[in-house]
Length: 566
Image 1 (cartoon, rainbow, N blue to C red):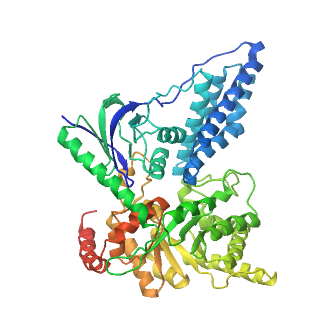
Image 2: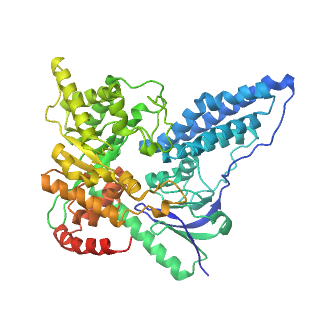
């Protein structure tokens, strides 16, 4: 009898994997309390420092093995762990505990982990919870070395499906490089490290498959159906034949996608759709172009503020933006202003994030309007780089027109300042509003009159509308992009753009999900911005759609959807 385990599927162009289970133990390592003799304290401290050094060496070795064409966001996971190993809270504080308490290196490190975990657990936002996971991964690596562990992974990984309680970013990358064909984890959410990496690597995975490590057995043949978030074991021949044929179709489909790079996203009825890329680093322009984008619809600038103690200078902003504009040639680049706070923190915080719920606190445009010196530096750099290419500016997390007018006044003042200094900029550079709160969506027509374009950020819009943190394993099943309230808000923003004659784009994850694209096009959206890896799939889908027919059908579909019980 077939055993089915349900989890959360990480669906890429390949959503199927068939292979034998390879179990990996990646649970937390627990240290036992231990003391060391007074004359061995310095020796114990040196043992700790050596373990930290070895852990860093392991990560650098893994990083060297990553191919050059790997998306930059994958490298960031390794870099984050390397930076944590350099943080004094981990690399030095345990040594002080060894000296003061006379305890073992393992116990000192575990006590430090427990202290830091309590701090993280008092914070509710998604990004800080992922930092908690990073802390666990880094500490476990050091503890493994301190306890005499070496690389105990099996030699034969190629062709296997990895089953584990969870996987660190380094594990996921290493296993992929050694030929693993799929991941199954007990824990995880759509925003977990394993899910993000699997999506970027294009490897099928099911995360949050509770009980997978208990119910599956080493060497057992299993099927991953990431399309439906299922893991199947003990399949009969008919079931295996079905999934083998589907895998063949998916592989042929992926091969066909590579040939679409230079073809337009033109529908069957001749409508041109603008497919844009979401990027975070200047280096991301290369995979964006490889994916066949028409430009950058969302350039997240927070990386400039991360993992540093001082604020970036105007020149640092300008050089980073110039690199992106140069990489994209004549294609448009939409630069989103600073969106720190809530799920994105930096070492330098103008004001401590002490509120109960940072997602509702001082973040994004609110932070910029409070700390205007920070905002003005970025505005000047964006204005200056507008003289070098096709640049647009976008303001995040607006909730009322007062914020919009204040921000535009600052932009106006910095334009005048640059003119007085004789510095070039494009006086006609479009300025847009990111619609990602219910308040902004409900008053979208007012924003459309004030701005040159609108862009719907569905990630936050859905979370704020449904009061669901999609990174929370306990409630992420309630995160529903097709909830009637969400659809009504999107529809209202699209109508506002049409009424005011202003373009409306979508830059949230919903825009790059094939299952939603026909609905979005039928609702009137003509500009979609997504992760570069999603571009070929979206382009092929659009080239097989008749949008005029979709528009006729969408009215009825929406009516049925909105009539459903909430």
